[in-house]
Length: 112
Image 1 (cartoon, rainbow, N blue to C red):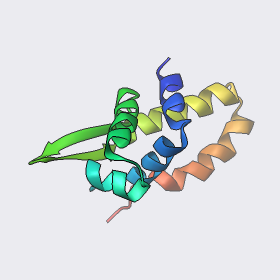
Image 2 (image 1 turned 45 degrees about the vertical axis):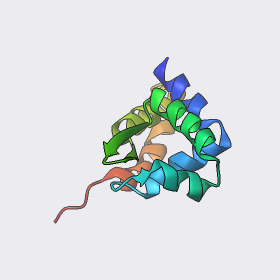
Image 3 (image 1 turned 90 degrees about the horizontal axis):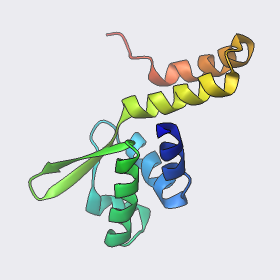
């Protein structure tokens, strides 16, 4: 199941910290070397963590010149969050409604 792969990828502290940092840096993303520096991980270790997050579909890397810029795949993140809500609530609106209300401001686009 894809949700299990995503949750397993986030279950490791360095990967979770990396994912959080990338969410905060949306939509610009962060170069791989800067990620390693900001997280405090050796570059080869960071590369392995980024590979796990990418295989889980949570992040994408885009080559720009000599750097790879990593960004969160927000659509995939939304899918995982919705899966958890739907699966855990078991269709009970009384359980899901407060959770959905709490999440709504996080992804509601601003109207200009």
